[in-house]
Length: 507
Image (cartoon, rainbow, N blue to C red; front, side):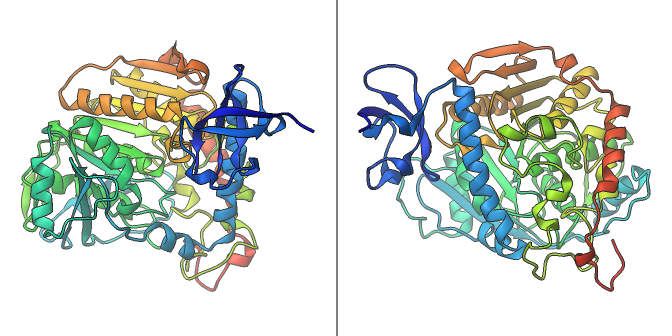
């Protein structure tokens, strides 16, 4: 009979049931799947709690090797959800409004569709100018915008209900408890297709609490119903609504020097595209009118990005090299769940004008405002802070960091060994996640105060979180032209399946 041991729980992910145990008799930490432990209520286990287990249930090894196992388990759970539910069902599940509880302020407001405004026309002109391949794309109209202000609510326990106040009163309370003049504009991720501000409240509250800032999120339009550049237009106008708030907004104008943009994944792709829009309009001193008011275009104080998606074609080497570390399906592109014949159809997908990507026509992957790795001019940019795992999309982020640094932009880039895409959302209780949030908030505060962060590239080792400096000028071995060539070669592999074709012409 196998020996029974006792150990102390070190959580990684109590929602999915795996983590670490430190044996009480000493030795290396053991990676375990807690569902195998003979103890009821494993989801209620807490860090530091003692548990009994059988030795074979734990797996020894370096922390990086343990992370490979954790990522495999997370991938299984992730793909089980994304492969078996329709796009509409997944959207419904990820965009639900949730009750506001705990130490958080949430104040909602909406703005009507912009009138006497040229921000849409300016954006579409930029899209046209950079559309070298004349790839087809949608030309969205402006729409009403729906926002949430988020802040840390002091002296509220974790179960405190949302107070019965008006939205204006909640914003006033939120502002009163804010200890900084900074404002975070948070752009959420989700494959451009899923999520809403309500999904990101806890993450954004954490950044607000650690930085002392208040944070604004906009409910950008989602693909596939609203393909590129609808979401980009929404976040562009959200930025303008901070700088020059129209009637109906509860806040006063916020100077760009007091705005730090934070984002993750596809939201980080939108943030980089927004920065490109602002840089291009600023260089030509373009006259901009938003809700009838003239707005001077300036870049924000900084960008802080988690797992930025810099190459939407997934053509760079890390997409294959790091597949074991990540939670997504393995290459090639033909394995994308929503292109499979058995993927559930719905009103949203396949698109009524069928295409091979949820966000845009694949021909747009080469576009600067879609894949930031193809941008060739970052001059005049604000400082940029990035963090990523050892993930499939990391080469796109590395190249953006290397390219911007080479043009004189202050860039700080962290890569975490063994960690998957947006790892704080997967391994919420990992020590890497705690470090990540501390560093992220530090960057937000430093940018808002025009302070200096250590620039350069750093690799965070799994064991001991040892930080190793890297040469930011040599993060990837390919040039800008080679990036574009790799993307261009990959585009033809994105094909509309025959079973998605309808009578409408292909977008």
